[in-house]
Each structure stands twice: as C-alpha cells, then as structure tokens.
Figure 1 (cartoon, rainbow, N blue to C red):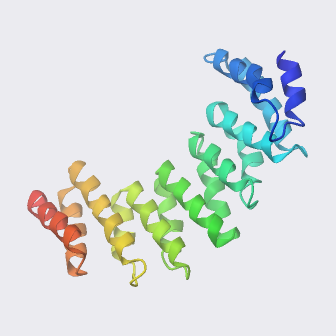
Figure 2 (figure 1 turned 90 degrees about the vertical axis):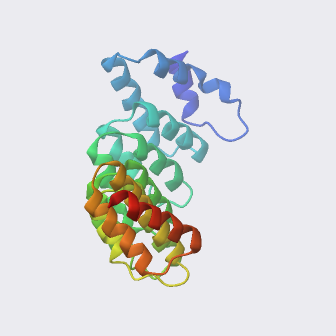
Length: 229
C-alpha cells in the first residue's frame, strides 16, 4: 500500500481523496525511532518534490517533511522559496527542520525573493530564533517596504537576544513601522529581563521610552525599568 500511495502522490491534486495518501502518513508515524525507515521515506518524498508533481502533491510533501525532514531535504525545499505558490509550504517545512542548513537556506533566500515572500521568510527566521539571523534581519529593517520592516522587527523580537535588541534600538522607524519596532524591542527587553540580563534589558526599555512610544508600551517599559534596576 505504501508503494501505491507514493505512486499516487506523483499525480495527486486538489479534489482527490486525501485518504489515498494515508499510508504515507501512517508510515511516517510508525518510523519514529527507526532512522533507516525515515531516511527511505525522506528520500522518496524529496524525489516527488523535485519532480513535476502538482502543487497539491508538493504541499503534501512539505507537510510530511515538517516531521521527518533533515539537512537532506533542505536543497529541495529551498528551491521552492522563490515560488509564489509553493514558498509558504517550503518555508514552513524549513522552520521545523532542526538542521542549521535549514536556517541558512532561509537567510540565503531573503535578498533574492519578492517583498511579499520576504515577509514570510522573515517570519520563519523569527520562529527558528537563530542568532545568525540577526544580521540579515537588521538589514531588512532598512527595507523600503514597511511590511518587510515590520516583519523584520517582529522577527528580531522573537529572537530576543542582546544583539537583536541592539539591532532594534538602532532602527530608524517611520510612522508606519514605529509600533512594530517598539513592540519588538519591548519583547526583547522582556526576554532579556527574564534571562537575568538586567543591564541589557534596562537599556532596551530606556530606548523605548526615549522614542515616545504609545501609552501602553510606555507603561510596560516603565515597569520594566523598575524591574531591571
């Protein structure tokens, strides 16, 4: 049944009964703890991803690779990132693959894709939370597209390390992006405070207050200043 499911996957499209792919899902569940079985499944899934299979089939492959993908899957997934129809699923799979190559693939794609795809890739970098993403996200803070800037701010806020806070503190927000940058810097400050990095947290709170934030952000930052003093 598994072989038949993989054969069906090659031409699987919207409107077909999703249960035809159930043997693949079941095999993935059963492969937990079996490195050889997972390797075989990953190899077969990658082959479909590299083929001319329909979009629905590739979406199904990306969902599967979120669970069993390794560094071996990264090149095939990275190839989807510039594709407006497939970028979303490709990046979601890369978000969840623990191999560092997955994060690097997202960073490499960032300057090469259209603005509306950048926002999604930036979001995925924030989810991964890697220190190596701070520099490219800081670069994105200077983008001409407000949506990209706001996404980069949120990504840095999610990473929440001292370098991320410094990147946000050095940003030059305009009215369209100020709220996102203030919110992200507040998130960083709270993460730093929770981690016991009081001087770094206090500096971040101070930067927020110096920029005349909204009332609720100002209140949170003042509370943070007291907690970090």
